[in-house]
Image (tube, rainbow, N blue to C red; front, side, top):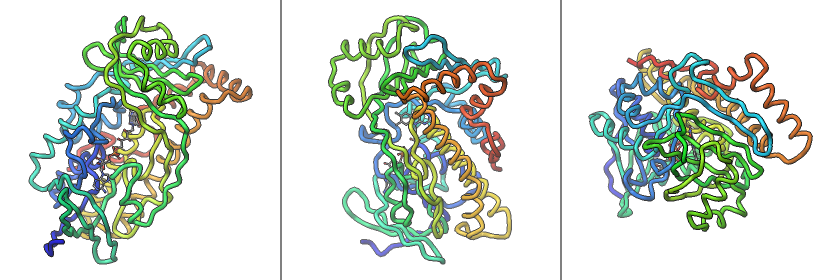
Length: 412
Ligand SMILES: Cc1cc2nc3c(=O)[nH]c(=O)nc-3n(C[C@H](O)[C@H](O)[C@H](O)COP(=O)(O)OP(=O)(O)OC[C@H]3O[C@@H](n4cnc5c(N)ncnc54)[C@H](O)[C@@H]3O)c2cc1C
């Protein structure tokens, strides 16, 4: 281990979608920030900036607008102008229109790798952020006077970083969360998400489809070049078989689940699969440290909310840090800041975890009482005034008290 120690105001553990966004959001404050990331962005094994498509909510859009990054992102994204929700084996469906909500788009779909290149380019232009990659945080010491992170590079060499505030954004299996002494409660859905893209026969017309099937939800999203991205939830036992199917057999099964609303599917691209596990950290802070993004909460992708929820963590911690910098408290690891962040984020996170989990259970159940409730729910969804609008506001990330960036207000 080298003896050199480098001090930063903030060290961010994990430079994936959320950690990178945080580093960019902090830029106007001119703080000394280090991002430690284990896997280079362009590597095939990069777990965050991969081939998935992410639906960005309104509040995430507003954030990127306030951070001056939106023109680059929107140029690489596809707008969602309507959401179509249906239940396999039942007639009828619900839908939400952007126009009816008074917005230009309900959200935008971007491929994670593409988002990564826009964010990375912006990060490289910042003098106040050091990106240390490939390197992992392998140990931390959280003392009242400062936080210390031991960083190991790809050659096994170690060096020490100290900081006022350590932010863990190292994903759902966060090792840094464990180093902080915080337990996460996990519950395995026994499902995997199989993702990829395909060519539908009919124009998808900027519509996002969410279809609840016997196996679990299936989402089909508009992406670039007339293609559609899919996220197909299959049971853990069936995942291996589905992944091993040849392209024609795979498309035939997917088509059977989705139906022919978009005509015949063809030209399926490379497939990948992800385990689906709900995880909730029991606390959001420890001495001089906080959790954001998936290290704090890992959701089922059914409502396309994980990244968007993580972006609201980013907006909230940046608000707290900005207030601290503007006030008399220059120590960014102060207890007031940690408590303010924790109080602020708990209820949004809890609400969304509950909402997403209930959606999976309600629509995934074969039990009769739940199926009846579900039918009433689908009706209520379309016909009870306000219900659809409330759902839309959650989906767009506009419910509850929003931090400055989530409202589109620049931090400085
Ligand atoms: C199939 C699927 C579809 C999804 N679709 C959507 C969607 O449409 N909308 C939406 O809002 N959300 C969606 N999500 C959720 C979203 O992908 C996640 O919420 C988001 O990726 C979380 O980002 P993160 O940066 O917190 O964690 P991650 O993406 O897991 O990134 C963690 C980063 O930390 C690095 N790292 C790990 N350990 C260390 C260490 N010790 N030291 C240094 N670096 C480390 C990793 O290499 C990685 O780059 C989806 C998820 C899945 C599985």
